[in-house]
Length: 156
Image 1 (tube, rainbow, N blue to C red):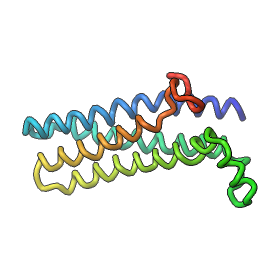
Image 2 (cartoon, one colour):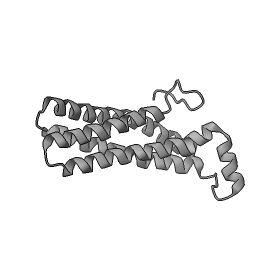
Image 3 (cartoon, rainbow, N blue to C red):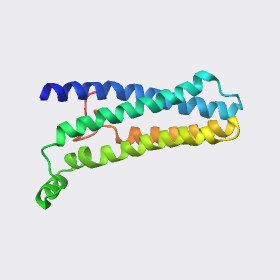
Image 4 (cartoon, helix red, strand yellow):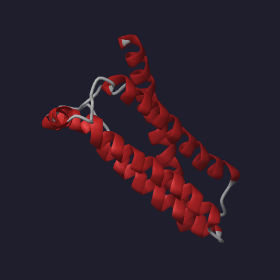
C-alpha cells in the first residue's frame, strides 16, 4: 500500500511542475497577447487546452492520493470529525489543500470555457489571462512548498 502511495505522490509532485509551467505560460502569453493586441496563434490556444487537461489529470491523481491516504478517517462520526480538525497539518491536507485546488481547477476550466464564448480575440486573451493567473496565484499559495512549516514537501 505504501508503494502505491509513494508512486502516486511522486507522480503528483512531478505533475505539479507541468501544471505550474503550463498554467503560468498560458496566462502570461495571453496577457502579453492582449496588451500587444496580437492575434491568438494556434499553439497558444493549444497551450491553454494542455494546461486545462494537465489540471484535470492532476485532480484525478490528487483525488486518488486523498482516497488512499484518508480512507481510514471517517467524517460521519463526531469523534472522527473533531480529531481530524485538531491538527492543523491534517486540516491542511484533508480540507484546505484539496478544496483550494479544486477551486483552482474550476477557475482554469471556467477561464477556458468563457474565453471560447468571447466575440473578439482580445476578449478571449483577457479572459484566459485573468482566470489562469488568478488560478496560478491560488495554486502557488496552497502548494506544500519545502519551506512551509508543518506541511512542506520536497521539491520533487
